[in-house]
Amino acid sequence: MDDVAARFSVGGELELNGRWSVTDLSDVADQGGVGVDGNQQTVWQGGLNWYPNRHFKFMLDFDHFIVTRSKGGAGGVNLFGRTGNLVVGRVQASF
Image (cartoon, rainbow, N blue to C red; front, side):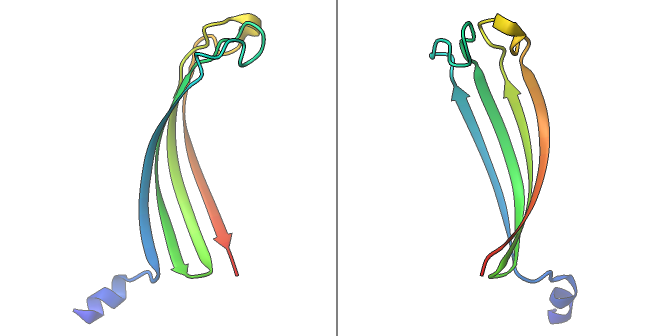
């Protein structure tokens, strides 16, 4: 069994993470400028971190965000809301 584990081992440690957040700015008048009365943003995030040793960290994250439309319409700011996805990677070294 040790041969099988050694064959598929990547070394280091893997970490699976996730989060969910909601930010509501609709109670702040003119928070985005005159006539823009805020909106709500929801983010779902999941990721995988790999620590091959104590000095390096490799991160890969996926985010899905939903932003509701603004109540104010001054200047055409976010009239319809937004939805999108992000894939983010990062390498960190610390000594």
